[in-house]
Amino acid sequence: MNEPRTIPLRPRDRLFAAVTLVLAVLLLPVGFVRHPGRARELACRWALGMRFPAEDLTGLTDGAMAAFTAARTEALWRHGQLVGLTSGYRDPQVQQRMFDEEVRRSGSPASARMLVLPPAESGHVKGIALDVRPREGARWLEEHGARYDLYRVYDNEWWHFEHRPDRRGTPLPRRPHPGVNPMAENGDQV
Image 1: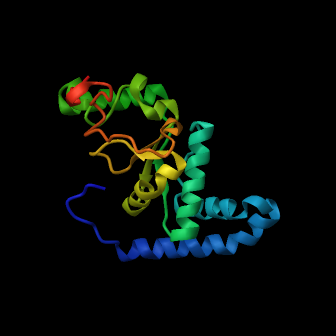
Image 2: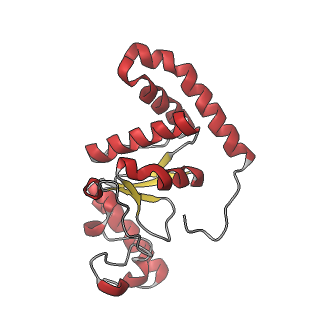
């Protein structure tokens, strides 16, 4: 993920992943009874819901929701990796408030755009952006996410991914930060 050094897993992260996987295994029979064809997905969703109880997937587009669900199901069952969501869809007013706060904190709209976009430009408002956790889950998603049309978009945000089905498995050229217009030449800012 273009990081200068790798941060080792903390022992508690390994423990959380192991406990979540055990919970998923224990929930698998219930998932099979509820929906035989989606038992692994259901057991994964329930186990991750216990690990990350504050997650809110509402407001994501149907495509983004399906892609994220499929990716995190594979991550857990095939690789024992947790992928949680810290932020998905945002209401335009919430995004505007975040942008305004960053303008106040950083001193200008241009510097604020390095971290937060205004609502009209935000993938969160469109329901296609996912801020994930933990860092190991983001690493997994960066490596495997293209299969689900989920791509890391910015160099300065290891946690931010967007659902882009138009890319069909071809990674996006990553931008240094949100304030760089992808259509501008030579990395000119908007």
